[in-house]
Length: 365
Image 1 (spheres, rainbow, N blue to C red):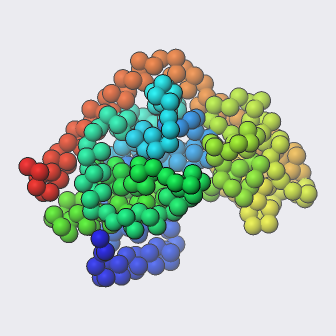
Image 2 (image 1 turned 120 degrees about the vertical axis):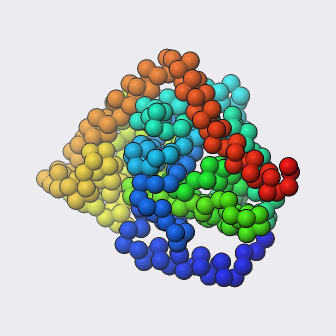
Image 3 (image 1 turned 90 degrees about the vertical axis):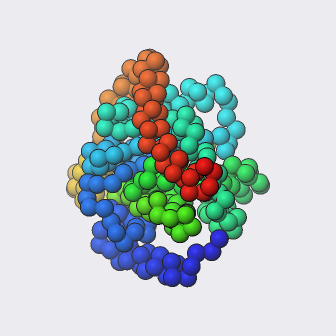
């Protein structure tokens, strides 16, 4: 379904405004003109239960999630297991991974008293709203989303679920009338689909959904330790490329020691010409909670080999308490199940009346 020309023109104006805004990164991604005042609104985000989070996940998303739960009155974080089955999953491993992810989120600082933490598949309203929104979405609109292009090429062909999962992402957000969504830059186009679907639904059936605004993290992307031109990734075949939040101190030290730098011994921050060293500076600054400039200043007089030890100390100091808490929580699976069950009840209390209203407007009842 094509959007009216005037809507696309407004959308373009918003994008231009965001690109020219000096505060880009605080609230970006073609936000609606009528913004919520600071500290109001509802935040939603999700994470797949696909392995232990790595350092990039922690700095790019989870650290920001913890901060947001203290900034907004209503926050929902979901372990999105429906999304995870777009790739083949072992059922037993999936059940375990869901609880492992819950433990990781709690250990990183997600507070179930401030945040609704729940398992997506246990709230059936997500799937039903996804179907309804899918009937308002054109195939060309989905075909041009970047992740479908990338993942389908890697597999030669993709599943229907992989093709339509951006619609489920939109349903995740709109089901709770979310106003803000923390995302990475590579997910902004998917959030724009949610904005488009909110407009399409509202135009056809009457105003119901707010257009969600993207919250982009100010943290720079963490790169692979073995290939600083690529993002750090769980699926990287090189074991030395990725630091997970459960790595032991000796493992962290070895991975950073073997990280790719260059032939210049001085530590500087220049991502274009010195990506490897700059990646270490980024990690050091983020983990020590200092500016990039201060991180470079602390490296004065050190060669890159000595600087790697400084980075290692900062990473170990931040991750050790998290790893220990994950181990403690992992030994009490009943507690983790209880946290998710409580979150599911609270999520359904919000989701059920919204879906009832959607069903009534669509004509199901």
